Image 1 (cartoon, rainbow, N blue to C red):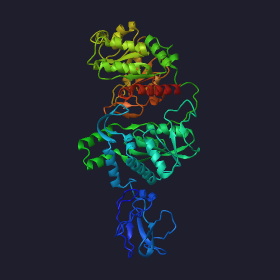
Image 2 (image 1 turned 90 degrees about the vertical axis):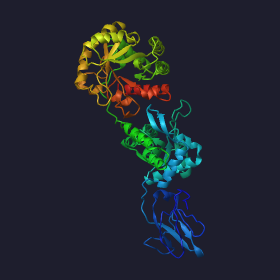
Image 3 (image 1 turned 120 degrees about the horizontal axis):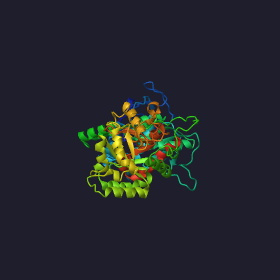
Length: 579
């Protein structure tokens, strides 16, 4: 028979004349003759397998003490109304917190309702993934929602999680947490994702007392960022958080991140487990399995632990943008410093889209949030001479600067023509350009012949964010020397970690030159092609940069405007915290 609570198949043949040792028997269920019993006690299901013995009343068998009044010890009635008791003898040995066959059933059920999909999917981070997990759909399948919540409760019991109340992470985890609280009578609180500016203005709704232990319930974990965003307001109201339960761990660094913040992750499933089950049942091909494995290996994430509070510094760690505007000799640098203060934005978007039409549409959406739009004009097959004037009109409308990421790298005479004429006539519409310093100082001389009279500014590529870059060390130092020779035209650097530069030669956060850093996302990690990502807080606060450059995290987002707003707010908060 199947256990009423965990569906585990366990046939127990009972004969009144014998008392043999039974295994995995928890709750009594009785069939037609011969009598079959299975699974005793809801709270025992997660603790399988257990060895048990039948013991007649007032006696003991195989060293099993008779416990007629103990909770969770069930009574069996045989012929002549004789009483027998099931006495637990074994240890907790389950490694999954859920019987393997039921793991398979759960995975197959999730796949059947398309909560697990395979193909090419764009994630919130902007990355393309061969697997997509959408657990929002389970609210339409009550039996599956119940099974999910029960499985998550069992893994908590196995992990000995200790909590008084629970909180579901908005929004997908809310129905799961609701099922758990209804099934197990554990109180629940709710975090508002958007705190209202009227009424009670509470971030955490519900009845609780300071000092209580709160369990965080989430549908899945990737980097752990969404969990941490819930943990912080929970702790702010005096609750303690030690345990987090999820249905699925995507195995992309979330567990390690949560552990670094003092949180224990309890997960029912992992991507590897699901793939293994689906391969076994011929639901996915070997090619898909390998694609998922490669994606996970190439896209590990991490979020740095919350830094400990430091004593208030005797002097600012960085100067304000507006105060640094008085240090520079270049009009475009002055404009940029003042623009950042005016818009409260240090966000530059790398609009590496496929067509000029896409770029124009994107620029109109995100323009209010950015200080600089970074372009790659040679990407666009639909480029027309009107492109520059269209882009300049949007820049005037939304008050941002245009940075053409041309990365000039030739001798001075050649770059004069590349900058001023050619197909794209970059000098006519770009406020800012950049260049490698491999050719030496002559490249700046050539570009300055064209750009200085137009009031443009030049960024030197002193460092790059790609793995294995050669743009570091001596190359960086030589780039700084060249910049110092041209203060009227060079407005700053493309850099990665200016605060680490020898003897603070880049004067990170304090000097006249601006540091702009690419490779920024909301969670640390990489893309499998060598690009390394840092968060806005790390780039601005720890590494001393001035402008964050964000690409796929915005232009591949489901809502680029909302994503740009979030990056702008995080970048500006990091700047204000570093003053």
